[in-house]
Length: 273
Image (tube, rainbow, N blue to C red; front, side, top):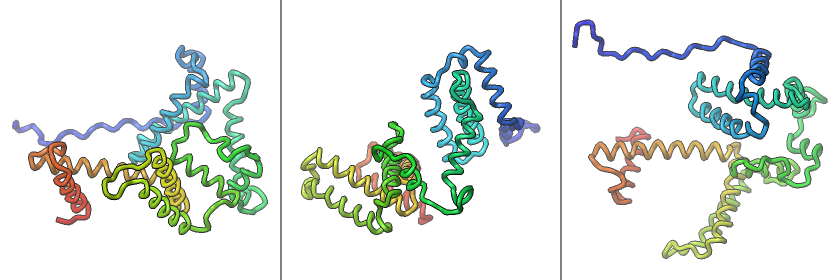
């Protein structure tokens, strides 16, 4: 190593912090893009649908990642979609960004009468049910809503009109009941499924009951499952690392040997030797 060489890698340069701008600046930019950019000018509400969904997922990933700069930029991308749809609607003479903001403020005032109205706190689902008079429990829920979140919202809506357990003990007992019904469809001697269609239905009931238990204990099932998914990925990667350190591959090991590595990972997480 030469005298002027350094054993340390240079610190990576951080991206510059964008200059603060106003909502009006962002709206003016969107209007300009619609006027002067061929691609932006060609977009419609329909063509933009996939981007809205993608950007929402990227914001969710940024929240999970915990990096503020990434979250800031991804929120900007999601905000672009709000601006885009608002300007497209504005050009059609339907509504504009100010109308979107007005609808939001009005909705938030209505949802919080204890803060902006008569001072009485009310259940949002009860207010919504009384106001909209839905033709069905699922009316208004997006068709593509993920199943765990859909179950949570359906249960919330039912709870809003009084169809709910008093506490978490009810759904806990229901989970145990559904586990037994699932077990009855699996042969205890061979593990064979006795009726595949019935098992699918019972497993659906079990998942729905678990979502209800999550809801009554203040946990969102989708977030709880995300957390467990991440834990499983982390533990599995550690299993692979431990096996590689022994000169082995998990795919070459028996289930019993893999279980030993899995137990070793859990001991490592608990700080045990």
